[in-house]
Image (cartoon, rainbow, N blue to C red):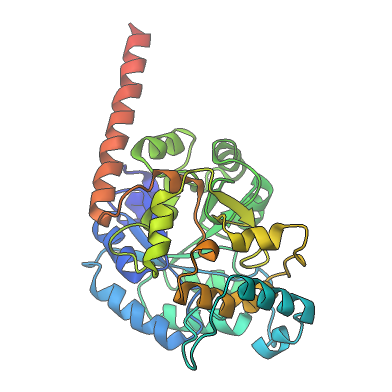
Length: 369
């Protein structure tokens, strides 16, 4: 599973693995892919430095990257308190009432454990980057498209390639024009923030739109055969996220959440604004149903929604309130049926890829004869 892009980055396989867990990112890099650590949960740059120190020490010298969440335009001078003040009282009551209906206890003093603020906040994201560029990052990815121009320049000066996620060819062209090096074509099937176009349609559209810029296929990819399909569509690699959630290295949290993922089918996800304010694919739960139902107040724009629900999600996870318990995950969740080490997942990816290539070669040989 080698391409021109994987050779450029020094990886054995053209597999880019996004994960919020340092141990998973390190295992992906050690297995021959490129582990990409998600930074969105690191409101404290000291915690990010701690985990990047650990990552650097456990990748055996293999390359790794970081994924941030930044808007293309600077939004400086807005504090968390400013954003909190914008949240309507009615939305706060809805959260309180929903938790009360399900009997969710309050958190104990000092037990706030969930992500409180996302890197969309300019000061948080830039503090993350001040830490990140102390490390030899092979890749800086941005989930909200191209980062601000000064961040792209800073990454390039650091010798770091820049990737940006796109849900349409139009977005991809904007990213190319903003100076990114890699476009991630993220299809409708993907977990987390995603658009309306399916991967099978989106990938070749983006490849054509930004050629010769390398493209990664993302969304609905969880096997070697699907990796082969992405490369056949013109991608130079794949971007995988959901696949790692049920690996042994993942610090997923509540055992009940792991059980829900292992039991879920591909139809058990929903694109909902309930998590961040932007459409994000996640497990369908009583929480998403409440927000998306006719009695819901409607999600607030990012980052208001994320701040509004942060403590509620911490309480749901802390007390494992099963009907409300969920996580961002793609439609590939239906293939996540057991908890395995990252290395075992990679072994299946490579063997499946080899089978797919051999099958296609067999078809081509029969056609030639």
